[in-house]
Structure formats: structure tokens, C-alpha cells
Amino acid sequence: MDELSVRRIEAALTTAFIGRSLAYLPEVTSTNDVARHLAVAGAADGTVVIADHQTAGRGRLERPWVAPPGSSLLLSLVLRPPLAPHQAQRLTMACGLAVLDAVKGATGLELSLKWPNDVLAGENKVAGILTELDLRPGSPCRIDYAIVGIGINVNLAAGELPAELIVPAASLSSLLGDRVPRLPLLVALLAAIEERYVAVRAGRSPHDEWAQRLITLGRRVTVSGGGGAMEGVAEGVEQDGALLLRLDDGRLERVLAGDVTLVRGAPGAPSISGPAPAV
Ligand code: BT5
Image (cartoon, rainbow, N blue to C red; front, side, top):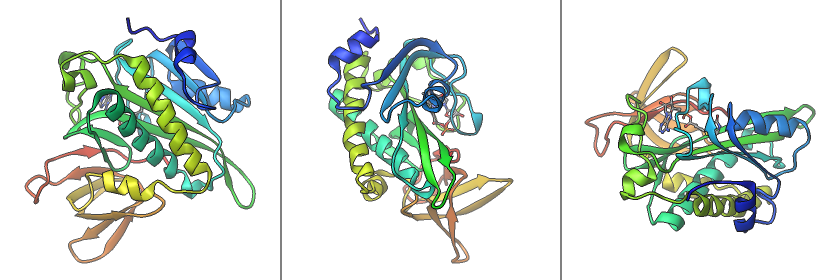
């Protein structure tokens, strides 16, 4: 049995505050939308919204996030970190690393990250993260709340995986050849998020560990977006999450948003791509 419910989740939770305020809904438009409404109404730091099905699940730039009912982990967190807007990518970094921790702990699978917000198994996308911000005006400007949405492909058969994507998709069950119970994975994920988010709250950045887990770095890539495209070598990522792209004429471009494709045929570079960061 793989049913989620508030009772089952609460009984299994190991966290101090992440998910202690919890909404489970069988069907929503998008868990990010529900979480935003709760945040506007004053929801506490660490509030979690989970759904079994989204009728309008989305990625960045309103791209659709596809997940058959009951197949996936679909959740959003309301976070109220003491961060400036330019530090918001720390939340995506921390949650991406938490997905790696939780999947490794629950299944033994070693996943990796692709700049800026994808979780991959080899070249296949297993999970995506959508971070949306609301800012508190003033000087200095701070984040009022952030909604971090996480979608993990858990039990999708090969035929259920969305096709014709720029980045091919995989699910944990398709990789393992067996179904993965969602509840223990969810509990492990919320615990991993709490550990990493507590560090972010205390002023520590997950940047260095995140950079180490990015398969994008050191590769030749094409970055497209805003009507143009640039090709170069992805040299590094800055503290705020920006990608540093060394162009062939020697200039270094700082890329905050764009579609990144690893250039086929370049050393060690299969073709992998993905769209721009929301933050
Ligand atoms: C993301 O966006 O990868 C962020 C996805 C976040 C989804 C979660 S689910 C819970 C919460 N509520 C929401 O409404 N959203 C969050 P992006 O990097 O823009 O990637 C979107 C692209 O991924 C799409 O354009 C498709 O190409 C591809 N895609 C869609 N569904 C997929 C899936 N199940 N597995 C792999 N790729 C998928």
C-alpha cells in the first residue's frame, strides 16, 4: 500500500519543524499555488503541502510538470529564511542536495545535479525543483517567503514517463526495476531538507557541496534564452548560483538564466539540457 495521508505522514515524521504544519490534498492545481496561499495567510516556516495529483503542475517559465496520479512525490515547502534575494538559490541548492541524500538513503541510488535545478540519474531527469519568491520591500530587501516545489518521479513505468523532452526522464522504479514506497522516501526527504535548511538559516551556504555534485561543470555547453544562444565551457558557479561560461573568445559570461545543453561530441559531454532558473 502506498497511500499518503496526514495521519500516516505525521506518524512517521522525524523532523522538528519541517512538515509539522502539513497539508495533504489528493488533487490540487499545483502544490506551489496552495503553499503560496498558505504563506500569504501566514503559514509557519517549514509548512509542507503534498498532493497525489496536480492538474496544473509546473516547472519554470510555466512549463508543465507531468506526473500521473499517485506516481510521484509532489510537494511544496513554505520557507521563511533570513536571506537576501540574491541568496535565494541557496534554498534550491539545499533542497537539491536533500533529494540526493534522501534517494541515496531510501534506495541506494546515487543521483547527481544539473545546473540549475535538475536531479539526474545518469543523463535522465528524475526530479525537478521550482523555487518562487515573495520579497519584503525595504532596505535591505529581504525574502518574505519562498515556496520550494519538489517533484520526484517515483513509481512511473517506462511508458508513463513523459516523452519527447529535451532531457529524457526516468523514475526511481524504472531505475531500480521495482516499486519504491513513497512514505519512507518522503520522511527521509523532509529530514534531509530540515538538516540542510537549518544550516542555511544559520548563514552557511551549500554552494561548495552543490558545485561538487553538478555534472554541468567543466563541460562544453550551449546556453540559450532571451532570444540568443552562447556556446562555451561551464567553468564554475558563483555563490549566488550563477553559471560562469567561458566563451571561445576568452570572455567570461555570468549566466543567471537560460537553457543549458551539453554540446554533443565535446570531451565527456553527452547532450543534456534544461531551462532557466526561476530565481
Ligand atoms: C522543473 O522545472 O524541473 C521544476 C519542476 C517542479 C515540479 C514540482 S511538483 C511539486 C511542485 N508543484 C508544482 O507545480 N511544481 C513543483 P523545469 O526545469 O522548468 O523543467 C520543466 C521541464 O521538465 C518540462 O518542460 C518538461 O520538459 C520536463 N518534465 C516535465 N515533467 C517531467 C517529469 N515528470 N520528469 C522529467 N521531466 C519532466
